[in-house]
Length: 124
Image 1 (cartoon, rainbow, N blue to C red):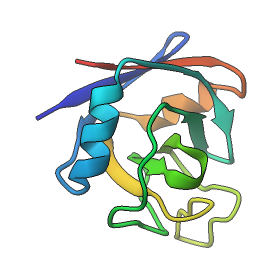
Image 2 (image 1 turned 30 degrees about the vertical axis):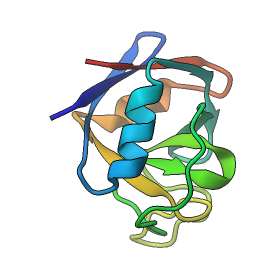
Image 3 (image 1 turned 90 degrees about the horizontal axis):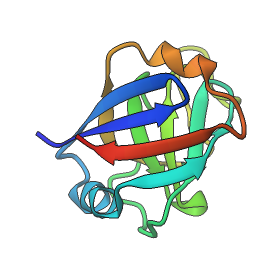
Image 4 (image 1 turned 120 degrees about the vertical axis):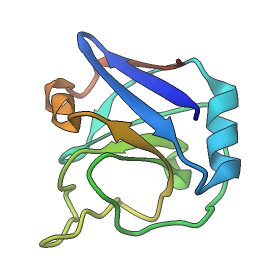
């Protein structure tokens, strides 16, 4: 199983790459390590990455801990709660995402990460 570590300041989170969207997962894996700057959108952090791939088994709702790729923004997204367009009981991204990984551990640590913070994603 391939794993990644997401690091922003003193916040670290590990995620497992899933088999669900192999083209997306492989493209992101091959682009690592990635350094970027965080954007927040409710309880989601996202940031631009050097990957350009279309939709692959897109999801318009996600679960806490899902890690996805958002094609319109060429962005890496981590969902740790409700976004600004979520509905009761449904976590919704701005538009469909390719879920390619699942966070291990308490994703609520991401509440400490703020807009503009530096972030890094590496293979482990």
